[in-house]
Length: 113
Length: 112
Image (cartoon, rainbow over all chains, first blue to last red; front, side, top):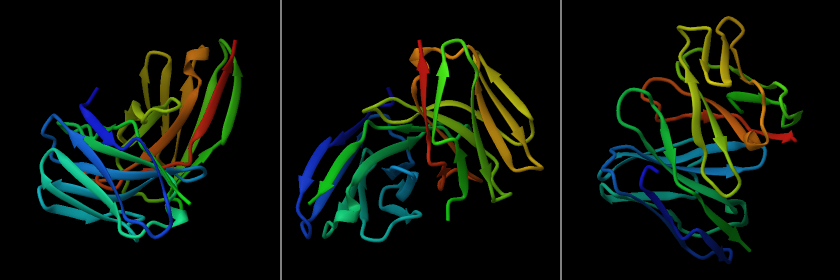
C-alpha cells in the first residue's frame, strides 16, 4: 500500500459540468501522475507533477487541468466534461530510488452522460 | 500512435501451462520496460521490470525476455495458476520515467 487515496471513487455527471478528482498521498513523494484507462488504449498519461506548483502535460492533456498546491494533493479538473472523458482515472506516484516504479491508486470511475 | 504494441488482447491458459504475452516498441530511447498486473477494481501493480542491458530477468514464475535488436520483449508466466488471472500491461519509458507508455493490455484467464 503506497498510501494513495483517490476521491471520489465513482462519479456520474452531465456534459458541460466541471469535475474535480482528488489524489492524496501520505508518503511525501515528489512525483505524481494522472492517467486515464480506456479499453484498447491501456493507460495514457494526462498530466504529471514534479513538485508543488510544478506540473507538465502528458500524452492526452487536452480538456484537463491540474493543480498541486501541497505535496500530498494532486487535483485533476475537467473544466467542462464531455462524453469522451468517460473513463477510469488513476493517480500514481513514483517510488523512491532509481527503479522508476509507479504506484497506482485504486482509480476513479467517471461517467459523463 | 501507440508506441508500445501488445498482443494478444486476451489469453486463456490451462492451470499449469505457460502464459506468454508479447510487446513491441518503436522508440529506441526507451530504457526501462516494466510489466504491470491489474486485478478488477484495483490499480495496476508492478510485477517485474527489465533494463536493456540484460536479455532476461526471472522472478519466481515470471520471466521477462528482452530482444533489443528486434525491439520486442515478452512476459512468460510458468506454471500458470487461476490466481494469475488478471490484466497485464507492458510499458516502456526513458530517462526520468515521467512519460511511461503502456500497451493496450492482455486479459489472462487461467482455467482450473
